[in-house]
Image 1 (cartoon, rainbow, N blue to C red):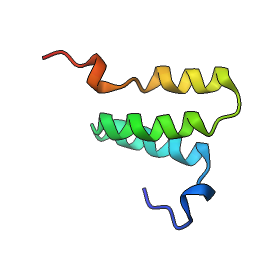
Image 2 (cartoon, rainbow, N blue to C red):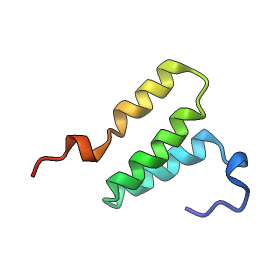
Image 3 (cartoon, rainbow, N blue to C red):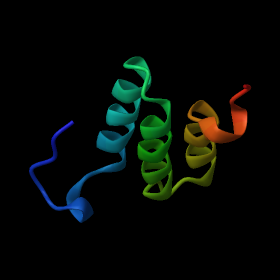
Length: 64
């Protein structure tokens, strides 16, 4: 997950791909943060909602 451009030039799809990578490697909170950024850059509210549903905040869904 290396972006060679400025943060404003990274697309929602790139953030979402990175979120998937982080989720696969067990980095759930980082996946959540990347997915939130992807959702915030998505113009379609339904798609943004689906992204957020796929990557919920692990601090609110975690059971101790």
